[in-house]
Length: 276
Length: 190
Image 1: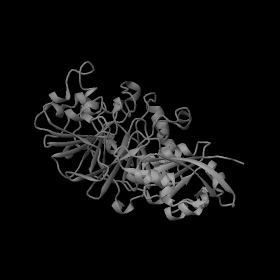
Image 2 (image 1 turned 180 degrees about the horizontal axis):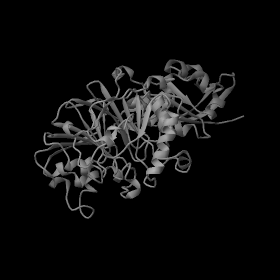
Image 3 (image 1 turned 30 degrees about the horizontal axis):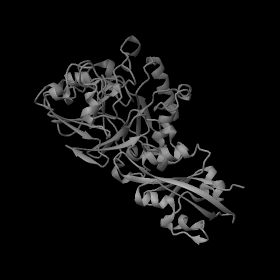
Image 4 (image 1 turned 120 degrees about the horizontal axis):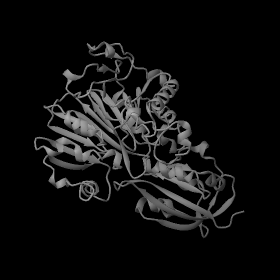
């Protein structure tokens, strides 16, 4: 299982000299498994553009799992090259809603916001509700669960060959009762439990969180507490705040490393790969 | 705690020929060069994580549904008594105002089976003991509709309380019933 980070920034793409170290593109993570023809992609932030132009020639099937439909997680969709090529078979999964996914995505992928409509895409496209029970996607097993974040968001658990990645990019577990003391009553624990790699929201410092309670994100200390509660084996801080430069992210990374004594924690870097 | 089990051992998968990269060590990941591909041949410094056996499926946690977590979060901040049951009908939470009415502390109980909470407080109306099915919380759960009624209970301290109770089912976006909530008021509080 090879996990590549194509976009790690939260809320808004922040290109520029001050974010060169960790990256400025918004959420997109690709997971390659044993089948070279199949790729799992988590979210379609601006980072998905570079994934699209670097996609291995063997890949034919792409399962794209959207954690939610806030703009920073879908803005790259219109620039994802495989959508415009007929050799690709793409399935887009997203949280269920009373409004069909076609209509929800169509609000962005249609004029006047975007010149191309979903129906005009060249690939073989399928739209699906995020799977609440484990679903087989090629060699992967993927499970979704609702997590605390405004406007219906899910986290994903991706498993293959005995390895597990949990992806909760936008998550505020601190709103769970008595956090972090009761696993049964904590949002996200069910899908994150015992993950080999937990990719989790770490947007704020403690001070910043105190003025953003209810915005749907975590301080790095909350991310560490959640990782401990879920018994995750390693933690990747994700969804870096757009106002944070490389120095800020590095300071938060060190703060988390001091708090996560027995495990490994780092801040996700755009363009990096982890192999499980 | 769990931290002791979370330790990972990083094993270099393939050393880069680029000394500026090869000297880096101990990280979860390493930066790839521009234009990197997902193809293994182009992954210059990928690392293997989790050398010890994975925990896998055996470690599942029976977490409450997110909607029930949020209902409890709200209830814990309300001045009105609130009582929450899961889809099986078992009592899983009541808040501090409810503790004062019931004469029991939530921390002493945590979970109370359906058969117990529906009878423990001796609910009655017009001098007649109520069948569990007549309680609004049970009706909300079974019929998946709101329910309302007035009745009396005898709390844990032996005091009689006259209550007005409104209950509603909690139904997730997937149309699954995940529990029910009762909010109640004392008709003649002391």
